[in-house]
Amino acid sequence: MSDGCDAYISQLYTYLDGELSDRECAQLQAHLEDCPPCLQEYERDAILKALVRRSCTSETAPETLRAQILTQITTVTVTEVRVHRN
Image (cartoon, rainbow, N blue to C red; front, top):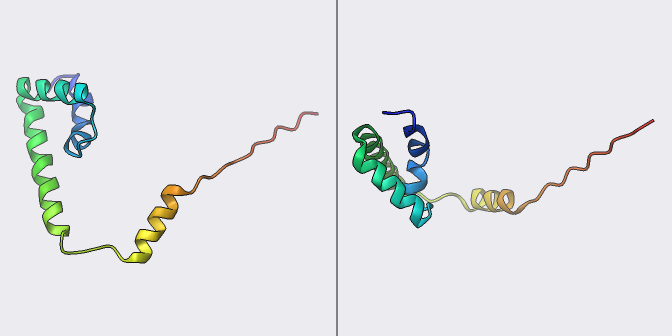
């Protein structure tokens, strides 16, 4: 693995989740074709993601948990900072 691999490795889950732009996908795919260690990391992460997906399909989150998560996602916190000058 080269020094430039860290940036690609950090994008693997984003890639697996389909959250990269077309340009980013193409760059990552080209890197994976030329870098066996990164391809190995990708394959491991893809297998892990598939395993988690299969293991969790029969379970659903309780409605209260879903509501709490949605509240957390949609809540905006504003903090006001006042500087007192003498």
